[in-house]
Figure 1 (cartoon, rainbow, N blue to C red):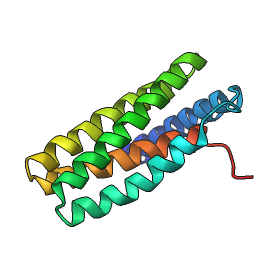
Figure 2: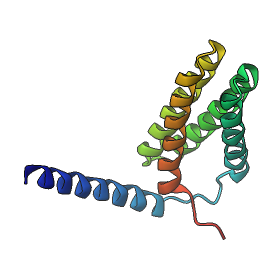
Figure 3: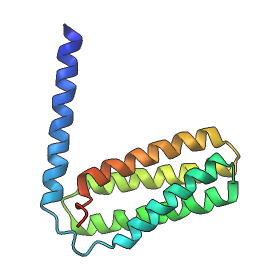
Amino acid sequence: MPNAIIARGAFATALALLGTLASAAANIDLTDFNDDVMRNMDDTVKSLDSDLAGHDRKSAQADAGSIRDGLHWAEEYFTRKGKVEDAVQLAKQGEGLASDVAKLAASNDFDAALASYDSLVKTCRRCHDAYKPPEL
């Protein structure tokens, strides 16, 4: 019984968080957002997956660096927008994870790099779920 209560509480908290993120996204004007930056990062994320699976150290470092730079752009963009600290924090978290992937690939620790990559993808998804406008 206590586990069911905890699970319901966690679910309610998650729903409240998602509602907060969704309302923040609804109140922000994203018409000046550079979609090309995100499209390039999406392509690079897919490439990074292949780099890591193939143990391609140099390509993994380069792709992770590109993703980190794109996320830095997103961090600055959302910082300028204001009132979306969660988006800023997700971008910062992603930057750190991309840096971790690059460092781990450089040291040939591809298992750990893949784990950081998985966390990076989840972080990107959390931000996209909250802020990515629907496709037109």
